[in-house]
Image 1 (cartoon, rainbow, N blue to C red):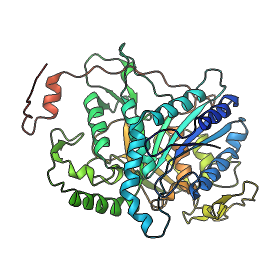
Image 2 (cartoon, rainbow, N blue to C red):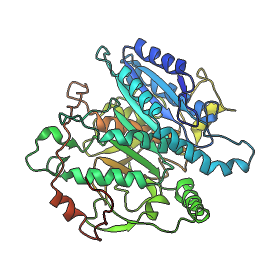
Image 3 (cartoon, rainbow, N blue to C red):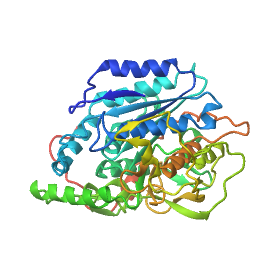
Image 4 (spheres, helix red, strand yellow):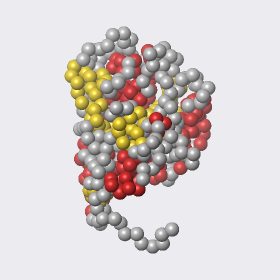
Length: 441
């Protein structure tokens, strides 16, 4: 596992860390690169390091990984998410650490580093390669804001500049939903969902398949635990308090993606995270009931992870196989992880099936998903066995297997043409037109 640390102003603190990470990736023939950005109250020496290390060790030991000689590589992106350590006073750093995460995301170094790591893993000489980006809490804020500007990037020739990473996922993002609304609004302006093709297609007439985004390939996925009190309760209180002391009382009304002209106060997006915003959440994980394990599994722990990787999920359903009781925490003792410690099966399997289901709001290639507490418990439950099994299902949903058991690389996309101005006017027809003052060129 490699570490790359960023300072409060968004600068990489030691370029030799980036060099060391790239060397590990270059040496690997079959790299599966997982880049993780931690959240609040964590840094390069916190307990999250142990939990991430256990996650990497777990997936690298699965028969699916060992049978293909996959090189699981982890890169831990660290920033000063923990400032004060005195109990109670550390809670006062909410505003300063949130601001630092936003600063790191706004600077060049973080996106440049993510691109360089992903491109190294995506080298044509590699026999197999994957790059997964994960952000948690304020790390979800950092990841989402870092890559959102590149999601819609296009070249002058009209071709989509494909991002070098394969999948981007945030868990319990502790960001306001201001930028997420803007991203979804732009995607809703460019694309419409076509149920017959199961794809997001261009709103401009005459566009071909090269601009269609398959439904199973969203640009980014926001996963939100339904019982996360940190983002569901504390975040709105903290942002409202900041509004009061900052004398921020005037809010403009902005269009709601997918609501065809409806406008609401932007305060609704500032005080709610993406996964807790009723105007943006567009997917839910719904229970399908108890299940039996599929035959032929070789894993001895968290077998749903293997089950979800070995088969396709055309209906977006997946398995979990464990009680979500925090049993994984026993592998991190005092912040230290022992990779040689025996990991017997829990002996208490509980097989269930679940399904990602579109429910309401803008149907665009940006999924904001509410997840039951049986899969992600509270704010820090992203490393639970059931959450990891769901992540495996997302990977297979985005990259299904062929009949020969191989993954076909997706075709490169062209950027869709911008719809005509009349189309934009119709979609935003409610509300007065803004007055334009000053020099117009």
